[in-house]
Length: 272
Ligand code: GUN
View 1 (cartoon, rainbow, N blue to C red):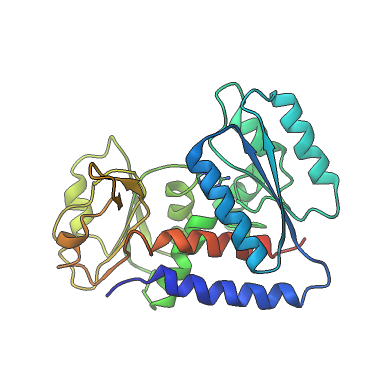
View 2: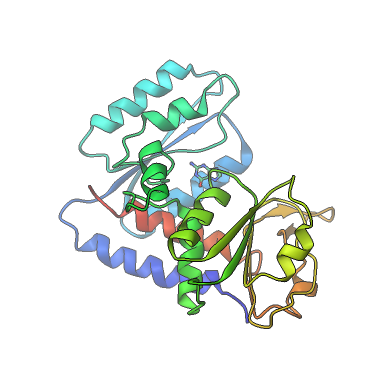
């Protein structure tokens, strides 16, 4: 069965729109984009369109590649203090002369719609509810829940240990009582771990999941998105091969991608 992220994202965005229309204060998301990374420009544009579609005010602050770290930090502090701004997102990656961690640590945890600040990451790690869960992991969990996939007691294999996807999704699965194996480039015998899992979540950026799954109800979630040698959008999972043995599989495109946007809009509609 296909995990249809596109269909679920539409349902979620409808709910977010309704929720926003009932709020006393209109949420206002500020997205900060530094430099001219073409992928980032597309992501930011999509976030802006999605926000406007659900009634969230959005402002994009475009800063040149050469902007100083000091200037960027000052801007974030201004938005932290500004009561009209309810959410702040700094699009990553940042130019090499800017310390990403310093930038993330400057964002107020109550406006950190990405869920990247130490307070939100730490709250997740110690079992407290963060102000915001990171968008992609939250979107993946929403997708699993939509299809009533049992997480408790499952053997979950997460491939990739990024701060944006791998680490937080592993924490969220652990919180829901899965037994989590967090795999990365040094992991031995990866294929055996994948094929014996109940749930596989791959967030790597190359074709790494290409085996027959042992369990007929296994679930394979593909977070990767990149262009293959023919220029076509593809993911980490060999869809044709893996879909023959997995019980559930998310497509690329139309799986996790739209869920990330819907989940981010859900976050951006929260006003603290
Ligand atoms: N770059 C790639 N993914 C993300 C994300 O989820 N948030 C931000 N801020 N930057 C990103």
